[in-house]
Amino acid sequence: MRFQKTLVDKNEVIMESAYEANSPLTTGKYAIQMIFNGAAAYTIANRELNLYSGNFIFLNQDTSYSRKIDSSVKVDAMSVLFDPDFVIDFEYSRTAKDELLLDEPKAEQRIAPVFVEAIYPLQGDMKFNLLNLKKQVEEGNTDNLLLNTYLEHCLLNYYALYDAEVLNRAAALKFLSHTTKSEILRRLSIARDYIISNYNKNICLEEIARIACLSVNHFLRTFKQAYHQSPHQFLTSIRLRQAKYFLRNTDYPVNEIVDIVGFECPSSFIRLFRNSFHITPGQYR
Amino acid sequence: MMTDELNYQVIFVRDVSLAAAFFMENLDLKKEEDLLVAGINCPVLKMFNGHRLMLLKHFEPETEPTVIYTDDCLRDFCKLKRKGIEMFSVPIYRTKGLSCEFFDPSGNHILLLEERDYTDA
Image (tube, rainbow over all chains, first blue to last red; front, side, top):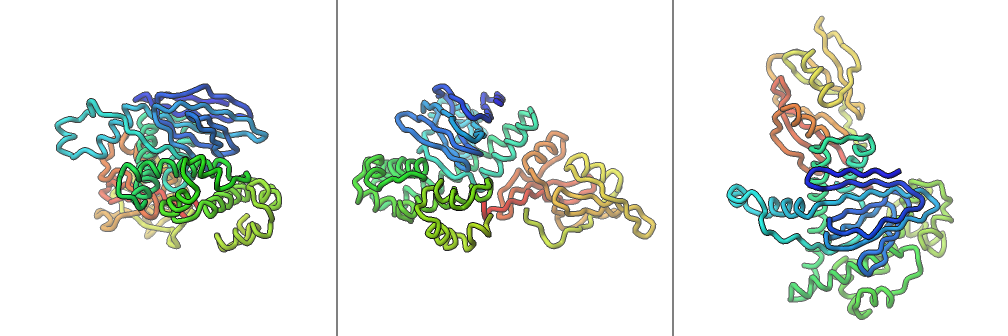
C-alpha cells in the first residue's frame, strides 16, 4: 500500500506499508522520516542508519538519502516533506518581530536553515500530532487547511525539541567557542545516531568514537557533558525503550525480546528494567 | 486516556436544541438521552472519553470556562474556524495537553482540551 499526498505550499505526506521497498535517492525538501512498525535502512549522505519503530529522523533539504525496507514484518513508514520556502517562512514568522512581519510579511532572500540531523524518539506532542495526522491521511481527509495545520505544529514541535536536544545540549558543553560547541555536538549526534541505529548489536566504544571522529577520552567526556549520561548508559536506555515497544506491541516471549534488543542475559535485563521503570517486564506487558 | 473524577457537567444555554445541534455538529458529541428536570427537557451529550455534558436552559451563560474533551484539538480547531466560529486562542500546549478556546452561541467560554498522557509517550 502506498499513499502520496501533495499539499499546498508543496509540502507532502507519504505513507507506506511494505515488507520490501526501495525508495530512490531523494533530496530537495526537509524531511521527517518515521517508522511506526519494523525497521528501515537509510543511506544518508555517507552514513548508513537503521531507523526503528518509535523513532524519527529529521533531514535537511540539501541532504540526499535513500531508504530500503527488507523485513519479515510489515513496516509502516511515514514521511513528512516540507518545502524549503515553507520552512523559511515558518522560521521567519517565528523569529522576526511583529513590526517587521507587518512591514515585510514575506521572508524574501532568506537562507534555508540548516539543522543538526539526528534520530529522536517519537514522543511528546510530536508523537500525538503525527499520529493524528496519520489517522486523517488514512481516513482519506484531503482538507489542506487541516493537513497544513498538522504540519505547522509538527515543525513547532520539532523546533521545541531541537532547542532542547541540540541548542541547549551544545550550550552545556564546556568550550568557549560557539563554533567548537556546535561542531562537537554535531559529532556527538553522529555517534548517538550510530548507537541508536545499532542498539541491538555488539558495538564497542572505540568504534563509536571513531565514527564521531573523536578520541575515546574526548568522546566520553563530551558525551557525558552533553547528554548527562555515559554512552553505555545511553545504549542501555535505548535497549530498554525498544524492549518496552516489543513488550507492548508484540507477543514475543521475554527471552526472545532480551535477545532482539541486544541484552546478554534475561536476569540482568529484568533487573535493569525494574530499576528503570519500577515495574517488571511481565507486569508492564 | 486520563480522565478527571468528575465526568458530568452542566452548561447553561439559551436554546437547548440549538446548543445540542452546535455541539453535536461541530465537536462530534453524541446525544445520550433527554432528561426532564422540573418538566424542562435537558439533553445529555456524551464526549468521546465518556464525559457527559448536560444542557440546561438559562439566559445567563456560565461564568467559568466549560471544558469539552476532544481526541484531536487541531482537527476541531480547523473545523470551527472553517464554520466561521471566532476562536480567541490558537491551539496552545499545556501540561495536560493541547487546547484552544472559543465562545459557543450562548456566550459560554469553552475550553476545548485534547488530554495527552506524556508519562509514557
